[in-house]
Amino acid sequence: MNRFGKDSRWIIPLSRRRKRKKTENKVRYVVMNVYCPNGCSLMDNQNNINGYPGIRIKYKRPGMDGEFVISAIEGDFSKTILSGILEEGVKDELYCPHCNTIFKKLVNCDCSSDGDMVVLGLTKTLDYNNAITFCNVTGCTRGSFIKSGDVIRHVRLRAT
Ligand SMILES: [Zn+2]
Ligand SMILES: [Zn+2]
Image (cartoon, rainbow, N blue to C red; front, side, top):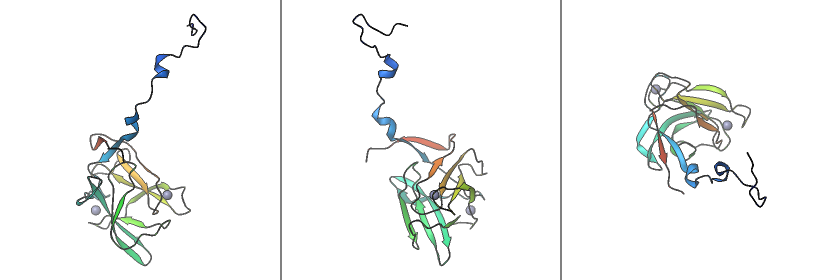
């Protein structure tokens, strides 16, 4: 294909010239339900974060324990601490607030020598292909949605 026009100007194919839509960056996933390894729902309808029910988690480390709620929105690291104190850069073991089962760990996180990526299933029976994962060190923003079926919803967030 001849890419030069009559006057020898470079012709950029349309597909490459098309601009990315600005809204693309604002499309995020929201977890509608997430479960502990025993199948308890961790959704907390009493504690909404940015308009959606949060995910309630129990934490423990030597000398401290409590509960917090994290945002169900992908990439949103907002958190409401219900009890206890979290320390930046410190790891907590994470548990189900209903049955006290410790969450499964997938891999180590790069953020510190002992950070773990915990995994929570989007289905009652844990399926690592339908799960979310995040680091158990306070302040670490590593985490992702591994895969989704109908269990998570695609939403558009308003620009903040
Ligand atoms: Zn449980
Ligand atoms: Zn980490």
